[in-house]
Image (tube, rainbow, N blue to C red; front, top):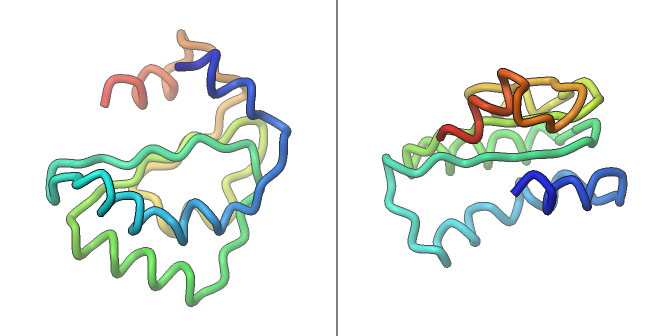
Length: 105
């Protein structure tokens, strides 16, 4: 998984897209409410408008999901506001404590 994820680092994206799309993806996957953890892995500085944060938090609460975010080599920005846990890491090295924590979910 780490090899696959590392291929995307530095390729650019709009961070609000995963946040906005997660409710649709969650429903499409038929993820069971209350037992499904969400994991975001990003190297982006995240700035989310207040309405996007509120909408995501309301949705996350409604499905009883937890969000754990791994932010590679950048400050987490607004991901801190929507995550239950956020870890800033220097790399996706599997022996790093935060990476091990997320992979153990």
